[in-house]
Image 1 (tube, rainbow, N blue to C red):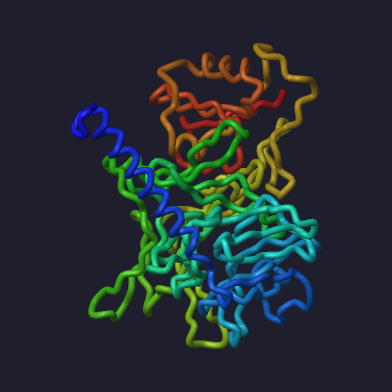
Image 2 (image 1 turned 180 degrees about the vertical axis):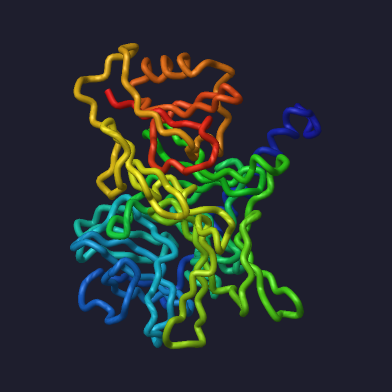
Length: 432
């Protein structure tokens, strides 16, 4: 008869008892159901809340509250709702702002529902019952939902541990205490516009503990347009949006990586926002006042607040324009540079692109571009070689060339050209 201490028998018992213990643990979690008092089902219908809201939105309040935050359904276009967390107290006359959204890419309709059932899964379903979004926490031991004073919405178990939290799923906004991990494991993505909450073309990731901003030139290619990580050592630390007291609580500092601003009062009710225009802004809320409760305390591309010029923002002059002293001053064109207007754009090609065919270019001397500030140019090469590379690339709208270093940048996006005093830094815009 085989000995109980035979290695194979012993390994079998270890495996068997481990399997039993795991099964018991899973069964115990399954038995932890959401108490009746913590369950809810809200139908998106009825009157809107009579209060000012960001983006001119209409909204309905869901009964999950952690003042000054509340879960809501809001829309900016008829019958296209997003489940979102609102920031702002009911008694305030100031605008309510949106700091988190569940279904950015898939808005729901009238009579959509949000529910937390006995199994602990928070589910957003459209009017026809189709599940649009959920926390994926069914039978994981959830016993309740709460919005903390920080604005973090959490699903918790009987020991108070968070099994899911909104802070792990940022949209375009970070609240104080919220972080982004390094190496792009999570990121902020702007909304398309004030009226369209779906994901836009700007993103913010963390590299070496610092924010790096990207513009989506195409679905498969993103270009950096602000990169502080180039000036800092390698780091795997996340970046946390923090509010820290300074000088015996006389003032406070809001910071994210190397971006920071000093405020005159406790600014823990603040958020960082990646805007539809590609800027990074800090907003601070004072819940002690009824009027003018919001203050924009920081804007990345505002020289007075950050030291970085508005001309460094790619979209400052729309699709094309020369920017000087915060103003869009000129529109390059084949017939000569003219006054800038929002209609300024790269010349339309009169024929289909043929890789390698000779192209004409409009030269704009004494300008720089977000590519020249945030990425290494190719080189050394002649201007003619740089031009030939743009000729063979149908996605190339123009190129940047620095004579003194013989560096070349091909530009699939043009946007704002920042006026500088060096005529050897030039942009060449493809005109045919």
